[in-house]
Image (cartoon, rainbow over all chains, first blue to last red; front, side, top):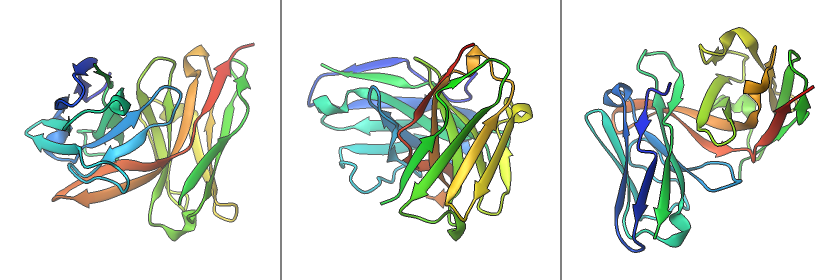
Length: 109
Length: 126
């Protein structure tokens, strides 16, 4: 079982703001990162280090963490943002092991 | 631009060993700036981290898979590899290689994967 918990599915009306969350004890100590995956494609890093965007990622994507919950916020969701989103962090044991959330399927209505 | 490309057999028989190689271009494994990971995704499922290898051969593995995994690196070819022993149907998945940063950002340490291969589908069947 994953040490990071995500809601299985979320929907948002086009142009509106949506928050996708990820919960886990390790998030109190380690930063969260987020990946976007479209069908048949490899995941793409959209947020790392809590709130940093790699080059080429639109600024409508932002990240934050409070306590044991990390959030990915998409401000003004677009049709092309419809995808699965996964969070990741280090595991809570202190070992340098990565863990992923179970993923959230985002539907843009 | 860093690119990663997985290669290996798409079909493996049960109980045999799965062997995959990841070739890195646009960056050097031997720079030591990054770690190199394997991640898999079973059909319709989420992502599972296998482990990482460093340019000098240091490796660390997912405890749930550790007994069956070996990773290696060939800096002369800018490649790293995965061997998974005693495969079963449960090991059928898309296998990805990814460049891995163990970093510190905003006052916190962590791990993330900034470049991924396109993935290779592995089927387990006799």
